[in-house]
Length: 321
Image 1 (cartoon, rainbow, N blue to C red):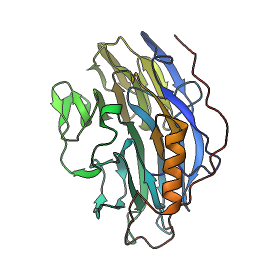
Image 2 (cartoon, rainbow, N blue to C red):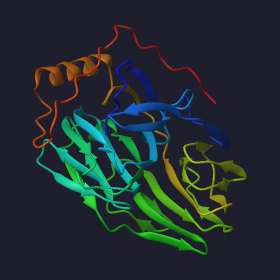
Image 3 (cartoon, rainbow, N blue to C red):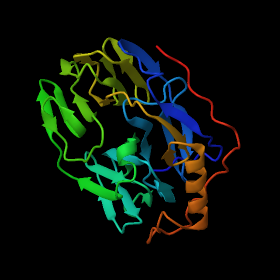
Image 4 (cartoon, one colour):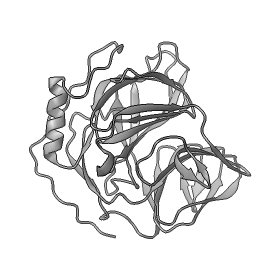
């Protein structure tokens, strides 16, 4: 999925400067962004004061939207580099096309995982005949320097492992949770899981104290370590936790995101992750010239032009907690 912000500017992320080495409860509010013709998203990462959670560098939550009489999601061809995109749905379908020739419909609780490596382009859209509601999350995982030139590829996994407890069903999207391991390819220590909680249930989820974590609220109402979270919000939890108390006020859907703190500093601009402004400038130029990122076939519409790159020097990040 694309960042469609036409006023995008380079942002320095990663490094240890923003990592909280102890358990905290930091509730993040979203920024609303229009995505395509009829989809509005709630952007949780990057956020003011919170750029990443482990290798998770970008989080959008959208829906549930009634698209019965609407085209639904329409994201034209656009480029990516230096990252993986994770498509995750609770309702609806998304048709993925990319410059490798992949054509795949992703459905609820199925993993659509695209690894850009050095360069790829793709589009996403609701099928012409689609379900009434569209509800999901789109996330990016930053690739570490050793793997950011990896060969681009797309993976689709319809069956994912489950972790269950009374009142809880957790689908392991990426990485490992309580011994269950996702088949999705990862390049750094990371975890992503979809948590379905029954109303009135209380449980404790095992965590890795070396990871930093956040919980994205998808639906319903729940308490995470005593903090009530509502759909479209995200609770940053810091590091140093071996378990996470959960209580469902109603039937609730959450996403657990975590990983080892991402030590490298990265530069994010539009749909690119690099290590310098020069790399970003070169990638933008390549997309505008029609080179390097390939071509997406079959999408009815023009590809996205890249926004202008402002000539503002990047400043180092200095916050340490």
